[in-house]
Length: 199
Image (tube, rainbow, N blue to C red; front, side, top):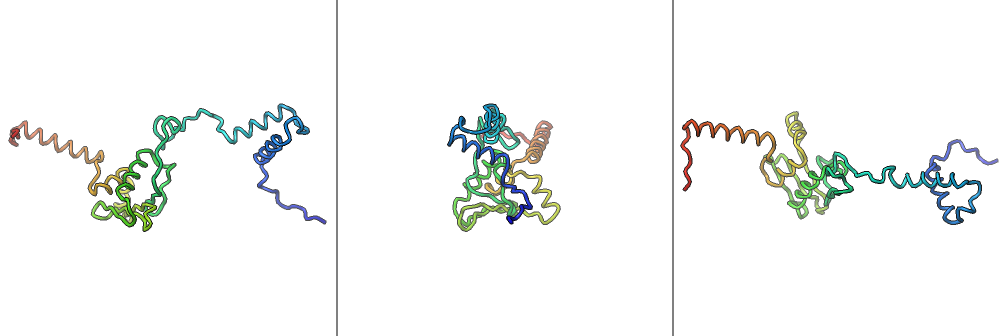
């Protein structure tokens, strides 16, 4: 006596049935397919087409991780090699074009195997693997201050600091520079600092 199946075969789905039917129809021809009306056949083929092509064929691919025009009008760049931030892979589909360009610039600054870049007194590091096929970025997160500092810094600014070795220009540093310049202008106008004369 044959064994009675106890579990339904999960691999047999509507999609696989439609694919099989499409194959049969291509091989034997639609006119020889028994038991299908033209409307049913058309409906099944449209379902298969929707599986292969999005319901909106004009979808521009706009997301928080694309250019404003969308990936269709302006495809975003790709990473030149795999990157890891604190041993977690940086996924291309979860990075903006700006971040990808910054990571690729960091990759260009580390062209060979076993090269290293440091920032923030050596606390932030980027190095290539021994084969040179990936870039490993390490940012300390062992204290609350270190975590807060790292979490408030974008991948782009991290890359900029690692490339240049010095602090990146941020909104905070720009604000501090503008405040210092305004204070200097005020002192110049008050005559407390002699004006510089061109040489």
